Image: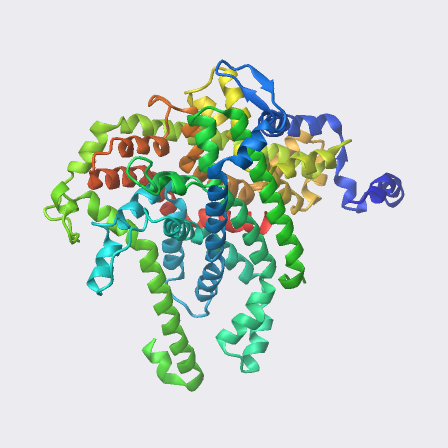
Length: 315
Length: 284
């Protein structure tokens, strides 16, 4: 609602009576307080205040016994001169880039699941969705087993067809790519479901008209589904990047600090954050990492919003 | 299928397409399901069968040793209880609070409402890590580290959930509450007797999403719960891993037992899960 509309609407109401929808939004601060108050208070204490405090922390050094002193930009200087940072940032960006590949895959699967006359639709949907409801810790443990250099089934199959095995999780860069693929596997079901909902919003008449014109299913997919679904695709891209930038569980559990030689060069931004904040207990440093991460996420989202004009079609 | 293919030309083409679709979908489904199959097979293997090179596919002889060992190595039932309690507290609390707040934002007007709402929405962009340190401080100051309530507390409140329900209430027509008001119902009665039943699909979507996320949540409980008494299963599972026993059947049995409750709930309530996720995408 625009400011102007807000200002004139009370007068409009008295004139036009109870017929406008706006009329039913009640000006009743006490009831509003009752409904919003409890959640609002909690959100303020546990989310809004922590943002303020987190930013404040990034300018402080927290002592071992809780007291903290203002250190200006020291934490940020430490973050940017930290040798691990560049690596962690690159790893995280690589992860985010690979993870985006899940979106076209999910779109294709959603389109396939929407094929008219398809049977076992529900069964397929359940199977594709299964990893989404599985605990990420369990996912990490299972994939670590499948990808084991010596005993893993993936390398066994490669050996069977005459290819050399790969040290999937202990080769730098390769391990991040592989973990991103596991991340795709884990999140695919959600994206498929959201795409299916989007595709079902596309008017059938468009597909019918295209079919009458003799367009093949593949052509209909490219000419109708992809452009009309682009707002959903955009939404999933934004979400995927935000989630990828915060990747932690899979890397933390699939790359063992004690036995994996690639561990020091395989951290993500949040692994670094966790190490500083809860292993070394340097909260100020960790908060600075989180602030840097926030800025990166905002910049990446802004870039995507800028780029959307080129490819997202709104009706 | 064969019958329809034989009927006419158009159908034949469609039939051929369908076979291609089935092939692709089945290939994909195999990739999605294979890790689970391997997890189950491995969990029933003996140590030597699991360690053999090349890997032995079937668990011969099958054994439940790994499952027994999970139960004796970590306090599994206790951790399961923690996860259940955590999930129930968080889900009931969050859904109740978000439903009320969502209704409040959708149906009431008060000074500063839009600013407040935009302020809350901005939180959605902030990475969770920025909250974690101050949230940890708060929970520490409340003396609630290593308690279930301490793990659940920040998760009782959710911008996402409030937004989801607000969108839902806004999509509902006004007529019924107008009628109830004319009949003399007060605002709470309207909310409770008229609007809640109408909002059921939105509420169920949030119940599903919240319980899924709290069951599987990892970083926050890892930070807050360092002792076995208050850990949920997601964190407890890492205890097995930390022992470095080189016992793959044990890890697989643990992973299976920890994931199974949510998978079973999903299989029973698949329609609600899928609707919930679809809903979060469309409305979010």
